[in-house]
Image 1 (spheres, one colour):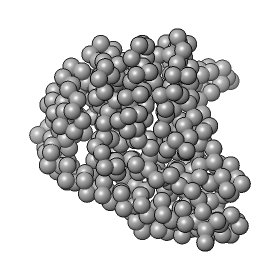
Image 2 (cartoon, helix red, strand yellow; image 1 turned 120 degrees about the horizontal axis):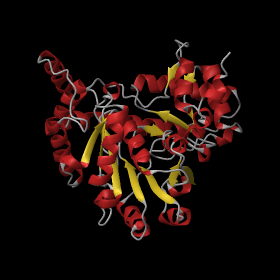
Image 3 (cartoon, one colour; image 1 turned 135 degrees about the horizontal axis):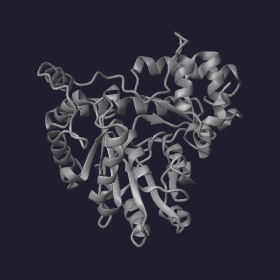
Length: 395
């Protein structure tokens, strides 16, 4: 008999599975379950985008594209980045990827060698730490705090930097907290980094979904930061294109060139049909559809924050993305225990805060990328759960 455990990479075996997918898998056999666990918009991909995909298939556009992505798509991304974020990127300073997740993977693997340190503010998206570990890098978590509105501070970053630091991951608007970084925050972080060799991976997948008065600003827009930042974005969240699997990264040409080499060997190209559809997604005419979705998310955001606070679960008001991150510590349960009991007793699936790092203990993530009816049913069941377990703190 083969010993499969010995045959496998120890690093791969040691990886913890995604806490998000764990609860997603659990609900698959629970038809009565209300799931608020996955960040998947309930909207259809706008028709203009779907129509473009259909047209590309009718024309027989089903061949490989250039490894870096279709030239017309990269030109559209260049125009979009300038129009939306005042960032200038040539088509040789970007790569089209299989979702934003591949862009993150490529960026980390292109730069991190064994022993290199990667600073990761937490709570955060689940992929950064395992990808870092697989490359032999050392994740250096920074615990952000509710009292700081879950924003990493320049002082925290300064303390974490060592001679081994290679990367800083910034994930704002943040999944799972909905936190954003404001202009002054970015200036202070840039001041810390200006005399270092640290590169920033700025995961901006939710950049189009913010609810503050000020427009979104990328750290790459801060003077001196463009040459030390890889901007990651994609189509999944903004355009409700999760299954189309399309993202992109923009950054310094030498770094993008290396990312393309890895992409050539591991993936080759992003899906051709998705790329043709994405050209139309970036057209200014689609902005109106995106704005309608953003306004609906905003309404749901306010509803969820109000209901959870009324129940006695203190909830930070998110300024971006489509998640709320209630504090469930009043229950006396761990995050995992709270979410598992809620699932078992009331068939509502939410994600333990610890899925996003140790600092998520005492919290849970709820996605409001679902219909209002869906959210209302879930909130009613959560309130019942709190009352039946004698942990209801509302009036």
